[in-house]
Amino acid sequence: MEAKAISRFVRVSPRKARIVVDLIRGKNVVAAQEILQFCDRAAAETVLKTLNSAVANAENQHHVRAESLVVKTCYVDEGPTMKRIRPRAKGSASPIRKRTSHITVIVATREEA
Image 1 (cartoon, rainbow, N blue to C red):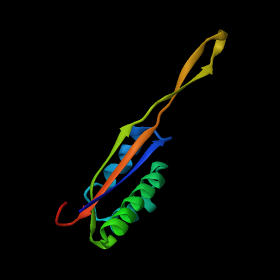
Image 2: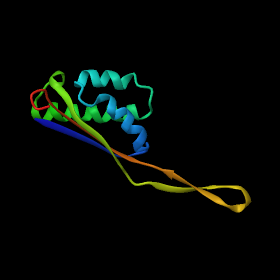
Image 3: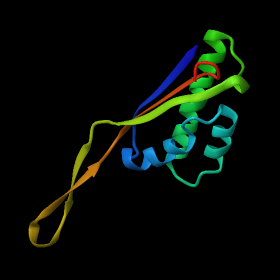
Image 4: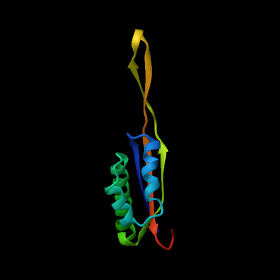
């Protein structure tokens, strides 16, 4: 039994989000939630919401308790990049890339993980 949740077009760079996602991969859900609640990184809040959504999907669709779930896989893919321009000296400009992420969290029961 697997349950999945995806957060798309999150305004955090994939490189920064991957640091947070690496903290919870392979842990049980209760421990992963505690880690994310006390993590100082800005992406931790979004990853926690995605994890809670995956747990809710497992509880509602497959009638599984949250204590028996494990974070099977979680990964961050790169979304579209918004391109902006910053004015510089002597009439020139330099690019600003506002990166986005797609965060995927898959939880499963202990036997499958």
